[in-house]
Image (cartoon, rainbow, N blue to C red):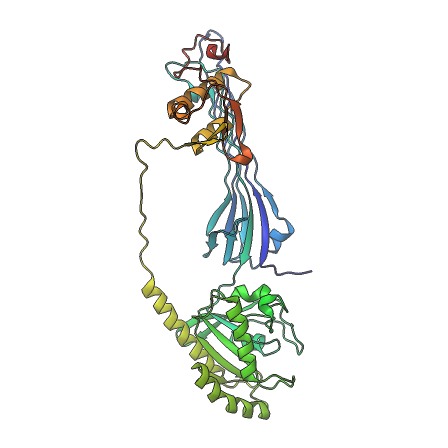
Length: 453
């Protein structure tokens, strides 16, 4: 069974907010105790958090459905409902989060970095919080706000300073093992390496990470071999090193054609043209390979201008020179990136004072009201309670929804939808309910304005 997964889909469902409580304080000799219904608790979030101890998305692939708990409902005697705990999903550093349309939502770098994949709903207000001078004893409370849900794609892009590219069995894993303390699997057959291997290298005062990219063969960018699966792991590298097998006996292969084949795949994948390149001609402990390396070194430098190094991971020759050259390239790129970084300036654009926060769109004979506030309000309304419906009508009227419907040409009885297409509340509009809060003359839970509605 695979132990390394660098792509997974997570189905995140946040918890709903707890309902508010409609309660009246009852105590002997205190007939007018007043409302004491408390607020509901917040629903739990689903949070992605970077953890250095996590190296793969395997656990998410095994358990893709993550659902947070709902908030607890409020109770009488001013006892607020408890907030639900968040669900924290650990992901490796370098995880990129995209939505179903392919839009990048987050690039998670740095231990402890958090991204909220699904937001828990807010708890509904109890009738104690809804009471005021004109509505002294509300007979209703607000429902908890539903939590959000999202299907997100997670892709791991390894964070390394130097990426080693080359044909299978060129010696990439061996090079990582001799330059660092990493101990990848090494064998004398192709596709031995099935996961990117990371190693930490120190050359002089520079410390950098090296990663080998397994499975690159001609056609990798179209899905052949393992290259398409792992090419994403070189996207973040500051420099690329071609590791070339100078001792191969395969017909039709030589160092120059190997480099050209790998470069063609990198160009097809795209986005790597600006990375500095170095060439490591490997297995030069073999006399014939050493002679071939001498023959092609000048040609490679003349055609591409890249530094070329003769090395042997078996004999440990040429490794210091190569490691210092990689360190120099990494140091230069880090300095350039630091110079290009500009201080982030947060620009705050406050909303206009007359910004109503909603929009009314005619859709045939119907009208759709879109906005965060009206959508949230209808979700929190208990439509079985007339007093709650009257309260919603007051809120919408104060917001200006009725005036805007009149301006858009809505007539009594027109279909009005509040919310998005996939989750809207639909009702027939009857603008007979005048704006203004109920005076409290109706029995609790009722609203006289709705008797003939």
